[in-house]
Amino acid sequence: MNDAGAHANYQASPDQALAQLSTHEGPLYIDLDGTLYLRNSTEDFIDSARPGLLAAVVLKAFELTKPWRWTGGAPTRDAWRVWVVWTLFPWTRARWRRRVSILAATYANRRLVDALQARKSSVAIVTIGFMPIIEPLVRALGFATNEIVAARFGFRDRIKGKLHLATTAFGDDRVASSLFVTDSPEDLPMLAKCRRPLLTSWPDAHLHRAFERVYIPGDYTSHAKRPGERYIWTAVIQEDLAYWVLSSVALAAAPLRHTLGLSFLLASFWIIYERGYVDNDWAAVHLERDGKLSKGFWSSRVTTPVVQPWAWAVATGAVAVYLLGPSAAVPLNLIKWLAVLSTTYWVFKLYNRIDKSSRPWLYVVLQFARAAAFLAVVPIVPVGGAALGSLAISRWVSYYLYRRGGGDWPQLDTNVIRLVFFAILAALLCASLGSSVILNWSAALLLAWSVFRARKELPRLLRGAHLIRHSEPRSAPQEQTRPTGIPDAGARQSSRPL
Image (cartoon, rainbow, N blue to C red; front, side, top):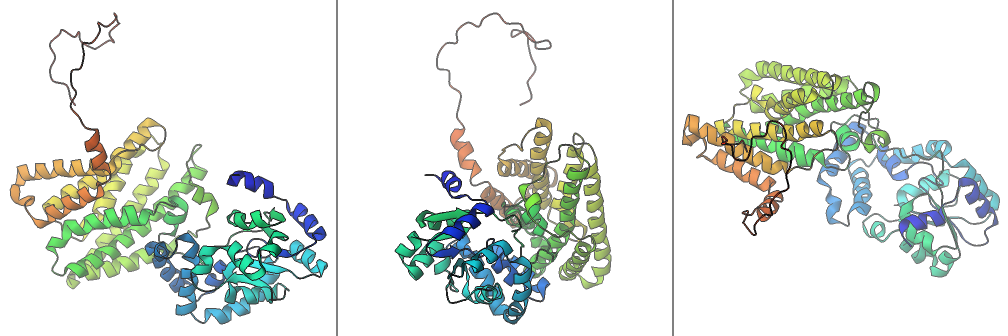
């Protein structure tokens, strides 16, 4: 049976679940998060960390690096997050114990709690939440803590899952005779082993993501605008930052300081560019009849304040211009940088409010701003201009075809397009300024990085390239009407554009 069929067999409404619970003879196993407790206990524990902004920034760094890739994947993500809070913010433990009584009173699944307590029989809470977090919450919900099956700190229990924890604690026979209520489709293995498996969604349950009320730059891009794409890593760091550094580092007296400065400068730029994303989605909802919005826009709860992003952008920009030096030029450079940010923001606002057929001509301006905004405060080598131009043009080509096509975003070999444009623009520079502009380490590194970025597309294109060979005579074509404006085959023609 596939997962969809299993879902259908196990699904039960809250009323059906409560009715079966009242008549079941045998062990009762109840999931915690989203079932007995209408939120997620792990997220609420992490959300208890203070100062919230610092904790959120630390966890954001972990989200970018994703160390759980090496410890078992997504099931171990929360183990890392809880460990960070437990270790670096130890006072959170005491705050959590103080908070659980309020959380339990507010978010207890009252209908389920009352039904279980009316049975006056033992109930086991079965969860892959972590025991030190679960115990005080279960006690606050009004249940004994002597029959809690929960994960220990570490990775093993999270990887093995809920069924393994339950069978280890109670044995296969008890699990097989049990009634199990959960809201999570991830519990299908456990549901498949129970006598009465109940997959029930409770209408008041909702996921409160930790620190969703705390503004963190990049959250809107990651969770609402481009969810699941790792866009900041793949497009912002591997493209924007990489080309910024490679185009200018040869002129820097202190390369490491220069790279750090550019990192802060890019963060400052993207904080404001992300405000353009927020406004773009606002326009899609309020101004457009056919505005396209990601699933993350509807499901994520990301705070989008107006003032805080500018405060972050000014602060990170000030750090950047200080690192990029010289110190005497810092005030002027900061003024120029703030002018760049303001101009980009208002161009994005205008872009969001003009008709879609005209947007490609402002989109190219935004892409050149992404590629070359740092030129307001940082000089580059000549070949760097070719690299930055190719970065902007390759993105614009995709968008132009998308708007002209009227359908989905075209599946183009964008990295190869970028490589080709870089080669062409660099060749033009060489022709006009001499070979020295491309016979240097900056040009070599930019070319190498462009080839590396196109490493998955190039082999496929090269394998598909072949010469057209004459294989057999073509049969005489039937008489056809030639479209107006197409010359006769026998007429002399000038060379066609390719």
